[in-house]
Image 1: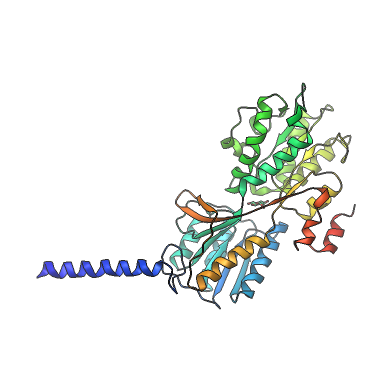
Image 2: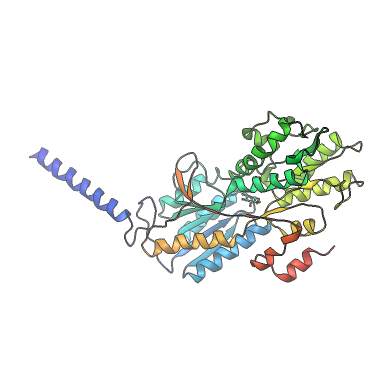
Amino acid sequence: MKLSKMIIAGFASVSMLIGMAACGGGTATRGSSNGSGTSIKKGDTIGISMPTKADQRWNVDGSNLKSDLQKAGFKVILSYANNSPSQQSTDINNLVSAGAKAIVVASVDGTAVGPAVNQAKAAGNIVIAYDRLIMNSDSVDYYVTFNLERTGILEADHIIDKLNLKNGGCKPTACNIELFTGSDDDNNAPYFFKGAWNLLQPYFKSGQLKDPSNHGGGITASFTNSDWKKISVHAWDQNTAQSQMDAIMSQAYSHGEKLSAVLSPYDAISQGVINSIKSHRPDMIPGTDSWPVITGQDGMDIAIHNIYWGMQGQTVFKNVALLASQTTKIISTLSNGRKPSGFGGTMNNGKMNVPSYFEKSQELTKSNLHTEVEVGFITEAQYQKDIQK
Ligand code: BGC
């Protein structure tokens, strides 16, 4: 008797499981991709946690997300973490307490944010990693970003082109180059570097490029992609980049040595580099051959200025409106009782493969800088302000 009761009970729970799995397969109220039973509907609150207001792009990201989600019929709470991992955890906890049903997180520190995100997930939230992947957590439902290696590829190609490396430039005397990577706590940074280093390393091997400074303990042809943290700029901070460049300039360029190129992964890092070069070497004149080729990323106002006036060669522009609309599409699809589709692939965060969308970035140089106005990233008035001397 006892045994048969157990069998019936066991059978009942198995069929419950089967029933739940079937629901998770895309019927009306099951919002989450992993079948956690989250429901989300129009009118619900979406919590957005952005890293900082100090960088231009995150302000644009935040306001795009807010207006797209509101237009799609959701309420929105938008918070900024002042680049502090602990503040971001507090922000996420607050979003959950305020009743958010989904959270969109551009992390300050992709690993440190894990516990807060796990709690949000446990409270029933859909979790979307925005631009930066949330690491070592099994609570991430979706990831929306740009093709990461492409940033480095566009930057390296610009340097290769300007130094004419494919056609024997920097021979027989190697050209001097300095290299920087992004923040050590940002999973994007190694991908950016990988894209660039895969293209630049062969020229270290051929003897066309060399790094004469001791930056990061010295960069030679045997430097590898996994060494990227040695040349990182914590928190993508302009002042940190500037002091690192100051050390490089004093050490390797204080006797008139030529600096041909600087691989910079972000416009504010480029600004730190530019400030340092200007103060150490007034004989290097922007827009002439004495000035190095300097790269960047994000299409910030400072980059428009620097590119226009010959201080920076290019920037990798990310039309972040695409990320906001992709994020809104995911949330709307879930609220309509369907499963999002059309992923570009998955990204492994150390714990799981996260379904991911990859948007395409684009290189801007002096000839197409105005694109930022055309796609609505900045206004014409802002552009005119940016290009003033
Ligand atoms: C973003 C870049 C940005 C950098 C600094 C990265 O995670 O992908 O677009 O330049 O952070 O904010």
